[in-house]
Image 1 (tube, one colour):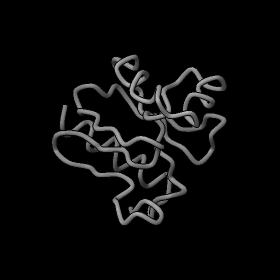
Image 2 (cartoon, rainbow, N blue to C red; image 1 turned 135 degrees about the vertical axis):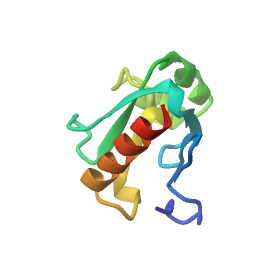
Image 3 (cartoon, rainbow, N blue to C red; image 1 turned 60 degrees about the vertical axis):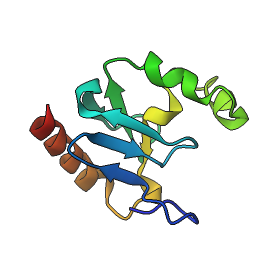
Image 4 (cartoon, rainbow, N blue to C red; image 1 turned 180 degrees about the vertical axis):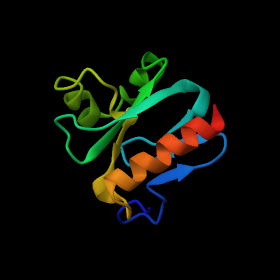
Length: 106
């Protein structure tokens, strides 16, 4: 699961949480801060990380003009979306893995 052109893993999964590098700004999210993972939104290739405190992630991108523009089209923080198109794993398979790790670590 490598981020395009940078050699950085697109998504890092550990026993402490996940680091999402698939959005414009990388963010670490602790398992204890994750309520669930959701798919099936208008962003068909993305998985949304339903955080217990989404406001915690909303202000991290205010200096990035692209994410600021994107905020007008979505009420959900950009850093809480996992873009599966940039990963070497199918969306359904990743969703199963993430839900398993969430149950295992909370």
